[in-house]
Image (cartoon, rainbow, N blue to C red; front, side):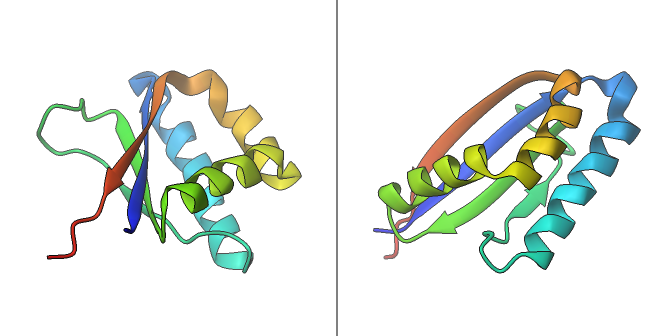
Length: 103
């Protein structure tokens, strides 16, 4: 059973430019480092989430691998530096896990 991990980040709309610039740095980190999962980023146009939300999604072979990824990034110094700069812009963050149905 594969799993999709979603990190839903609602940020201060008045700081959108700075927030998204830092998110571009996270994307570059993923491209540059082979030990990083290459995630997909989306921003709502309409739906239940406000437009000042960024959603990062990554697919993993199972729930344990998704949890291991979260542990990995929480201990990575390069990720921590960027996160420390971006964190003041957050209104809320939640982590979601989805079972991928491969019918």
